[in-house]
Image 1 (cartoon, rainbow, N blue to C red):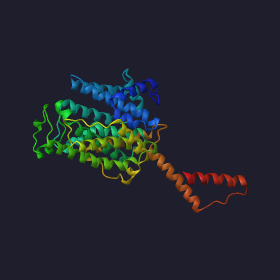
Image 2 (tube, rainbow, N blue to C red):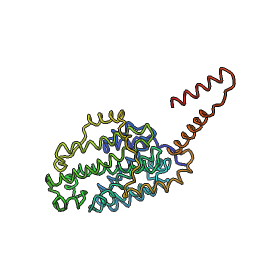
Image 3 (cartoon, rainbow, N blue to C red):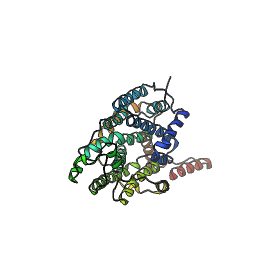
Image 4 (tube, one colour):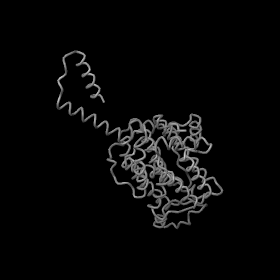
Length: 366
């Protein structure tokens, strides 16, 4: 039996309920997405939430990672487990041609968490962020029908920037849970051995220096990501811009507290989120960058995975890529331009002139 094109409404409702509590920032920004993108995005984020909890809350994280891999095997085989999230995701991965490699990378990142891995350099930390967040940025771009490598690179920039922001915000919370994500070489440069951030960690101005430095790197990537928003369908841009603004606001809150993310966890208040959502609807400043910067080396493998999948995507019936739509529009505009240079003398008659007037009027307004 062929897979349906849309998730079951009941399964979609279950995914939505899961995110209403577990992913408030996504839930806030998603209201600006068109329904055709918001629904599959809800499914994607629900799976990410379930996957993260499966590892984070398990007594045997390594076994939980293996179980996630088995769930993906079933999803990609079109035989998902009897679970609303799995059933919905099986529909979404087929209807949007989502590469399995991106989900495998996400699970790799969760496995790194299960290992308690630390990160010697910023590059190592970005490699981790590429897996747990860059993957989500790339997958969201695919859900919007855009498979352009430059747009994917900018989406990965945004995902990595968000993850670096999360890490900067949660230094104290992570330390108390026995986790450390700050680059070890940065800590050493600040005069802080890694072991000094134990479960009894207290605020230290030297930690604040590292947090500030990490947020500066996130800001650089937020700025790089701006150019990719204009490559997305027009209806999707406000939501992505809103997500970028809401996450970037965390840095503003941390700066106001002297970059203390140990004794306080910065949370963007609801009224501020509403204001940023409103700004995203009218703000056009994100279109000022070219978006053509080379992809981060640590995320290139994600873009390569999408390009490998493109041959499959091209053969899907009814699946229109944004590049195909743009190419079609360019052909239409080229035809109009040629007609403008070599006008065809219309036959006599009021009806003919009226039809021509309507056609050219519509093109002028397009």
